[in-house]
Image 1 (spheres, rainbow, N blue to C red):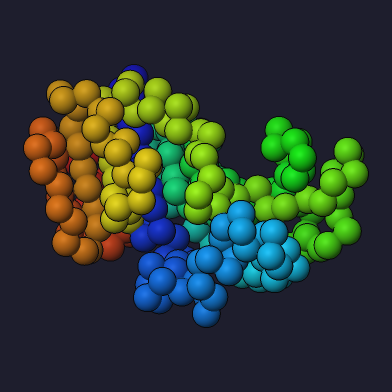
Image 2: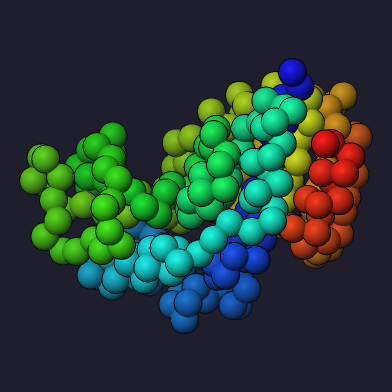
Length: 226
């Protein structure tokens, strides 16, 4: 069975109504990234950070997978599929994808501030000041903030290096280290890039570009793969 690795970015979830800061001139839901998505923001105003992610979770609860998520899941019928995503939502899982590597964390999880290995699944959209881990420390969103290490990168490198087919959907390939994943794909693998924007990609063998939104691009690609 051939292995497909699908690398997804914000463009996949945008069609499900999940907003990203890149669509708003550096603002994410009217907040500067430095106010809500950095370690300094957490130290300065943890309540603001918690409130911000609470609203993101509340939004996510009503969001549904779109056609792109569904087609990625359908590829499992014929291929060994692994998803590597920059997104912190759970729409790939909702669509039925079985193997998902979250590079930037998961919105519906939280973790200890003293031991990052203590990770908990949230039962609701609320995480408040005073919610503590078993060691007695405040819980924080299980999200990789700007300036923090990306612990799942090694897993992603390993997955991508084994791909027979590599698909990039809805990623601008500008946020590193994740954007460098395409360089770990073997030269002989088929590669597809689906994004409506102009993306500068050079010296990548066997690359086919579909300048389309995630859903229409995946529908087109499914005709070839399925």
